Length: 95
Image 1: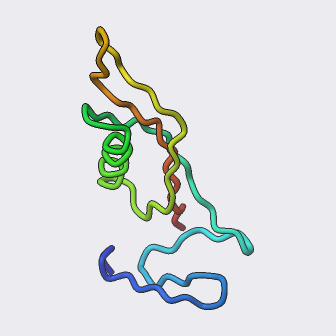
Image 2 (image 1 turned 90 degrees about the vertical axis):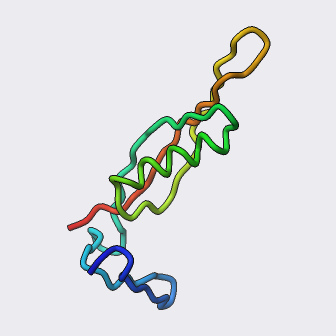
């Protein structure tokens, strides 16, 4: 199945995915991996965070969560010229 043909249904408190990629489940706990990446933008912190997710999603499947861990900006003179968002990206580990 392709990524777009995956189906999901809600049963109780857990979500069941019918897909060719099966997340690794240890007992009742799904295992996830975490990546830290930095997104950049000349416009805003929001754009920097979205850029990080967009680029990461090109090579990482099944991204579930993201968290902005830190924000920084590059300053030249009295102007902000670049926004940086340090992101933690959470995705399922597959069997």
